[in-house]
Image (cartoon, rainbow over all chains, first blue to last red; front, side):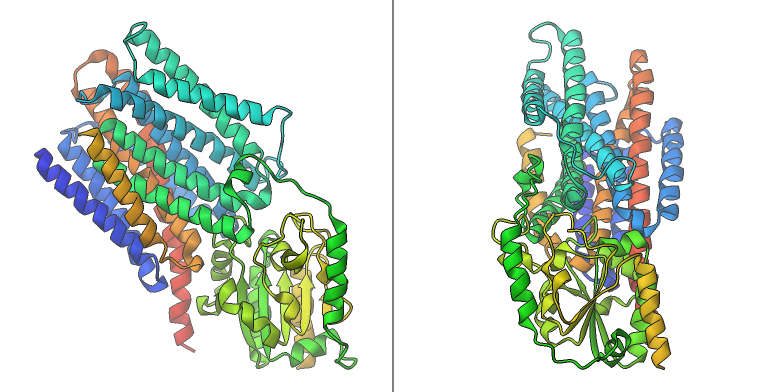
Length: 475
Length: 105
């Protein structure tokens, strides 16, 4: 295979990958989009084997077989609730692979001689750094999500010093890579650079992700996803493979885009999260005022209807799921309740806040698992205006994303964060585990609202089955 | 490959990718993310090339590190690719499945 042909094929494959991604924007075509991307990668593998004339090297197939067995076991076994930690873990192994390619390049093992050795060495070290940061950061994130590690942010005394110092050391090792062999002789240089870059970037990855708390995970995972792509792209630069560079770049952009969305919907600044500003200020006064405002908002205009009767009379219902639903594994009960309500003549919709859950789109996947038709799932902006015309809202394990304090309580961590206008609905059923403030630590004035709020505390499954019973009783 | 050329490709891919991804609705953000995740395993190409070339380059001292480090890289990247595309497919099937079921009753 000539290199011209190889480059043409790489360009074509980059375009098919983009085509596959653009097909991911619609549910109907998304399955095929994913398959097209997968075929593109497979073709890339075959082309690489042919181009480098290594198709006869048997060990490659053994390694791939091992990877296929492990990967497909993950893919088949994982539960939808575990999706965030699986994505984190897979990001990590992707980062590891890129870092290893970087190491091999720096060692000069299995590489065609580069015409641009300095560029190749520098990008190799960069690939190691980004790859190892991704690996360690992802492992910590996965550990937190899987509850192997505490979800609370861990902050060391000299956290910023550690981070800044490791950044400086990493920068030094990258720059040093440009002078490999020129100062002390190649072999010692490479060993020193490898040692510094691997150890320090592992430290950096650990320090930055251990400081991130549970609810900031959607942002962290998106960011690590971006980094794993960037690591691949940089590794591609090191070995001069354009397919790696282009696909890695696309992945990097996608992760960055998702990170942006998450930050915007959480009203968080990316730098704040990276520098660990999860400061939870206890400012009770502004929330107190809003409490009064919220409870005044609605006059008592209902008779002495029981909760069950209210629910039965509701003609329009919006269900608001949160991470609590995921924790309680209550999505199937939610579906049952929705079916009952629909059988009762109610129009049932779901309002999904962009950061509900632990990764972007997490709630949608869980509800899809419970066979909720995706047409009933509404994004925040699409449904927020409808809450005021809704008879009943059922909140399941969500708190911060519907806290009205976000609109007015200046000085609280969630101030300015876009929230669901749940408080505008006539009747609100809240199936939360307890009344403790959500992750942001801001009290929810809805809990003390005098009328129209029905608190159902405890396990969401129990609360939901109670509601289903109400509807059955009324029949 | 000229470095300037590579950096240019990176810039173009990032920009084009960004605008295409903007069209994906938040409904599909989890599958998008796991799909992207699978794609980041594209490093497998580099890993395979390294393992293969370490054997064919006929430099004896390269074979062992090539097989160990490169082999580990191939395994890791394959897990990434297969696992990523696998779960993405599973999730997307879940979304699509209901479409057909809904039409039946």
